[in-house]
Image (tube, rainbow, N blue to C red; front, side):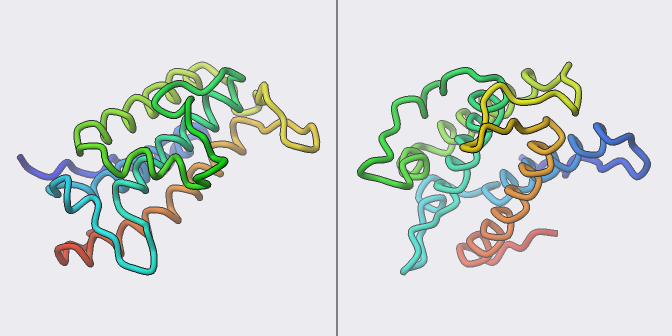
Length: 172
């Protein structure tokens, strides 16, 4: 199966089209770093770090749910993340995905992304989140989208390094 191409980035799109295109670009970039790898390769660590591609993808599926489902829409987290216990494992969202197969990992990620897209499709960039931060302030959808781009960009850098160390593949 050929490697999927990166989603296009509009050169002159409006604000919403630009933000969602960059977010989708980074979502695809993260998943691209897993392309062609088997389950064991997705779990390779490089001590002293416990970070793996599986842990990164699981983390980002959880982040998608946290920002779009829980904070923006104000709904409870859904499985596979609703029952996580962060008391004994502060990285529980990463640990959850570490033993999943590639198919399970991608299914959880795609479900979280699809849910996020559905929740934001008709929303204004100025729409505020249902939930608040500790100070009682709400986030605009615009802020959340920018934050998600930043979060993905940072983790895509991690994924680039992990992937290169596994088989020498570098992002183009």
